[in-house]
Length: 364
Ligand SMILES: [Zn+2]
Image (cartoon, rainbow, N blue to C red; front, side, top):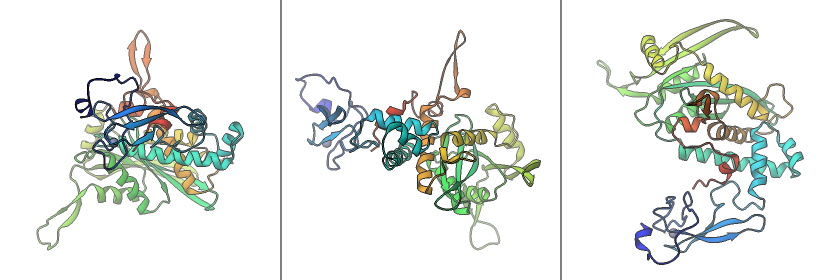
């Protein structure tokens, strides 16, 4: 620990280095973001466009800018400008709109948003880990992609209690896409956590879920072990029967586990106990408003599927970290409420993030 090694003389620390880390792989404080441990000291401010903190590692001497590990690393633009572009994108403006408002070329804005999207995915990977959740709803929304001249699907998985978007995937509607979504769900969950799943009637979910929440079982009379869904896996589908565009009837079907057990688990977290997907459908409606290209009958179609991918990732970060959710607010007494974001409800962070904090928070 650096504070024990270094001399007690000298000026006390006035600049908070928490969250920053030495990125010298040979240094003993490599990737250590804890200000109480690492050896970082403030080294003034640099940069032509905006004053940016510079940090020096006391142990190895390596210097880095506070922009390292953020979407604005090596950009010659102020963080407020990029934060504004990001915020406008999160409010559903298209790249052409943002380019017009901020007087930057569409290519520049697209590059910023791409970096934001990558940043969101890395932030999600870093902070959404070892989660224990009770009920996950799965759904997919479809949109057209101009360059493909075909449709793209945005797959989403939501934790019902915290309302957090646990995982998402942009791609086609094949079995591999369902696998990708469920795999990303398992990546954020604790190893022992097997939540209750509900989805619509798409059969790809069943194979993806039993593939990820299953085990090899020895069976009498068979030479080789057989792959079986975990006995604790509970999965129900909410199926809609449509005649043309009209909804004809709905019914539910249990695919894994007992319906009574599923009912008890859902009632234990204050739900009615029925199989439904209304929460994730509501979330997808929010996504449709946040991502310009996902709106119905829109001019702002995504040109390429990767561009759509970054926009969805950005929308996910905005939804999880920056926006308070009405259903999550806590009563403070005297008719006052404290807003909470899904990430706060999940215990991943302690406060509501501003868009500027999102783009200046380093992920190493
Ligand atoms: Zn170092």
